[in-house]
Image (tube, rainbow, N blue to C red; front, side, top):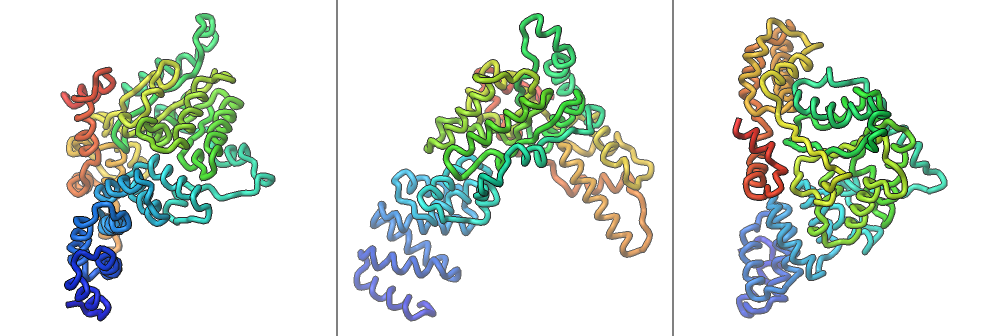
Length: 437
């Protein structure tokens, strides 16, 4: 039956005692390590769980099996059940955290990993460390402000002229953000603070980060790009401290644009969280936005997200991210502008930008860049064969557009459901308007 004698012995023993769950668990543990016996593993572990539905060691083994075979949803469902019963092993914590990470649920991945580290500080995993863990540095040698100045804060050299398309978004940012900063004295006479928070949302690759940086360049302000790794720390309380220090740096360097990418991972709904650590980070974030102890005057706080429906509603309260702007894929005119910007320094000949743009249905800015890369790679292959480099032409770009598929389609499929069935406040009306076009 099996090519390993020990497995045959276990199988024979189970024939004599088929209800012996301890014996069957020994068999499935052995089968788990042998990929050639996947079917036997699945069959025996299902028998075991039908005999003992509370056999959490077997469930965790099945969870690990699902993860190894790319069945992330099944892995997470099973892992959450074991987690709720507080029966996860150290390996189980790591597998569940990595499953969340692969599903791009950074908030839950970080919280599960943080809890695992609290239970065992020596625990480590390369993928999770790269995503979340901060190296333990001697505090006497660590100067957070120096690190921020060296790594996060910059003075952008781009402005709105460098942003292709997105005219309505630029106009809205100009009216709500730039004009108040340019006429600060006038606004103060009316008791209006200069600065505030805006939330940019839309499909990935449509320029949310780029337009945020261009906003800083437009008003000659400093720009701080804050990522998850700049905030989240494995040690309790350090994440809140890091967040406070970043806001403090922005307050010392006004006018300043403080940009939070993937803000839904940092400010996920507190009702969805099982751990208190993430909730305290959100509370600290809300406190910093309110400027309870200090003023945020002169600071423009921009959050960007692909999933606004995952953001805690408290962030949308007036005075926080009360201005919400939809950043759609570019229209045909915008696509033409993006093409011209991206092809500006490349060898081209007689490009019909209108014709190319019409072939880029549902393309984001990032999709256009990817399509150009495909066209260039094709030209390079030809040049290597012939020894003669030739410029890009209209046909090359159209051919490349047939290879690269738009990345925004899946996002709009999900967003449409929220816009139609979870839109009581009218938050997603812009999505519906865009889809009607």
